[in-house]
Image (cartoon, rainbow, N blue to C red; front, side):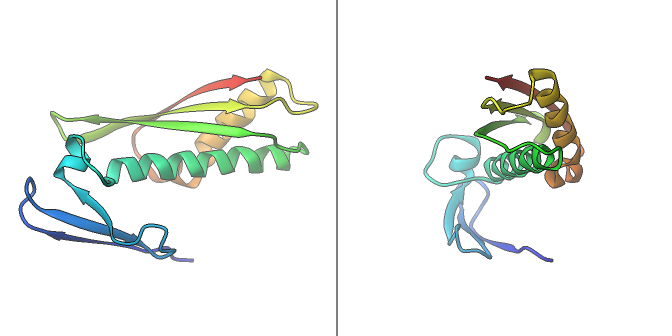
Length: 139
């Protein structure tokens, strides 16, 4: 299986602009620029997209792990906070904040253990070489 995306850029780093498109067309010539990446501007940026991909992948991995353990997942909500070090222009880590609704037969300790396993085994986590932390709230 292959997934594709493409980017176009025109101009200098600080005054240029570009568009990002994905195979699914959910992003279709979506604007990105220096301002959307490092300041406030209308459009997206690579770091935001990486955080979104990680949040989506991790949340699906939690659901799959719960199902594999014989449970029926309920609402799962994840925020992914990507840390970008502007001095080194490096992603230094991603913090995942998971809020899970109560699931019959699953106590908080079991839920947290399943979430930790999903963090380690989600496809995007495995593709990254940065520190990934996890905070879990289970109601």
